[in-house]
Amino acid sequence: MSGRGEFHSFLDQRLKDLGQQRQVAVVVAHYNLVPAILANTDHVCTLPLRFLQRFSEQLDIFKLPFDLPKFAIAMAWHPRSEHDAGHRWLREQLKSVEL
Image (cartoon, rainbow, N blue to C red; front, side, top):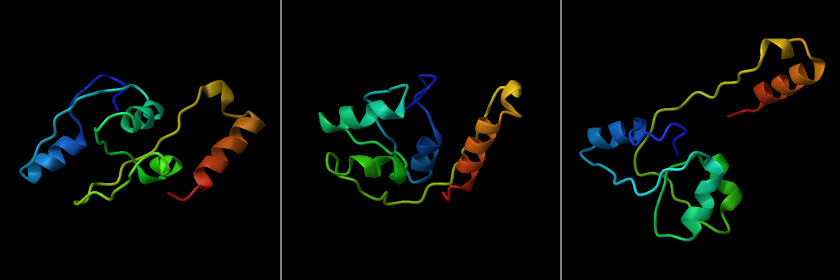
């Protein structure tokens, strides 16, 4: 998955550290496209487990045989939404979710 069409990521660096490399066959702009592609090919990918669990009936899911660093999740919003009660409520709900 690459929103910018890049073929190199933190995963490539980790694989290099382990003396390995990957061959990128497909790049998509949105995570939601990945399960449909995987279900119809013999490709593999690395995505967060919490995302993939929704597709456990269609996909085989395995833990990576090596550790990866944690990644940050960020929120952004337009300044005009800063004081909107509904928007503030949603931001608080998102912040309360344990990752």
